[in-house]
Length: 382
Ligand SMILES: Nc1nc2c(ncn2[C@@H]2O[C@H](COP(=O)(O)OP(=O)(O)O)[C@@H](O)[C@H]2O)c(=O)[nH]1
Ligand SMILES: [Mg+2]
Image 1 (cartoon, rainbow, N blue to C red):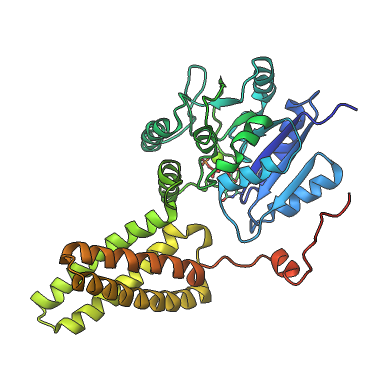
Image 2: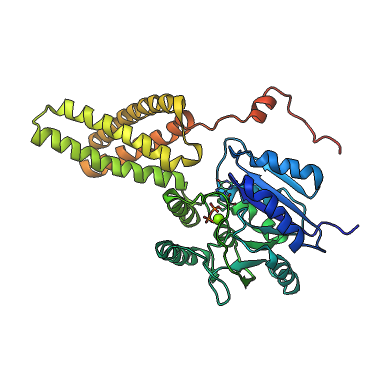
């Protein structure tokens, strides 16, 4: 029996209606190729995972990785790619927007030209952007230019989510991947320490038949996070940079409220300072929950506990800020750098403590199950 040649990794969120049509399209397009299809589902409420498992009962080439308490397109693709033994790996969307009939062409090109990667591109001659709004095309062009800067790779469609790669290339870059946001292709090429050998195959981007796009404004922020990680990720965590930016907005708002209450309302300094601090802590909490910790966003009761722990963490942070600044001033440092040191120390504290208590990762069911189990000295014999 010929061995497995190609794995098709399909990130999916609420794509129930597209599962069966996609499997049929792949079966027709990949006739003669030994392949498997791996859906990576983030616990879609519409039951996508259960449906894929049902399909897997009748077709052993089909399986699903169901991730609980997780979200993210790029990280889903990475986990799918790492889960297969196939020497060639394709990534494509579940929504039938990617034209599966060009997969054999891409695979042949990858093999015959000994490439790392073949990308299906939407905007070279012969390809098309489908019915995208002009604003979205402009945004995509802007992102593309930024992406080219960090990836040192002249892809004509670096935002494409449809490509085939050689497993050896994946192994080369897997430890450097950021796994943030929507742009897995950019992540892959920007993680390479050497020029990537790539090819391109144009295709016509189809319109969605079922389900809705998951792209929203926060995806743009995640893209920024990916760029940050690729630029400064070795030095400082991009999450900390975003936390710091949210904090900087907070400082500006704090000073504005203080000014308003003191100068316009003529309130006492202590009152104004306390009101400003509470408004800003609350605002920062919700901004961090929506942006910085988007992947671990707190909801419902968790939101209330989270807010309370954030108030507590930031109050201690404020004391540390003040102590350090005063200490520096007493040591002869002038007030501006002293204030800055205090602010940085307070922010590092807030970031560290809120990361541990406010947005602590939920323990997965598996982790809870195994937490009491003895640690194996040696891997079990297979
Ligand atoms: N596992 C997983 N898949 C996702 C997530 N967000 C989007 N997807 C899937 O990724 C693919 C592309 O998303 P889509 O919303 O169609 O993006 P668009 O084509 O750029 O509008 C689709 O197959 C989605 O179901 C996610 O958070 N987790
Ligand atoms: Mg889509």
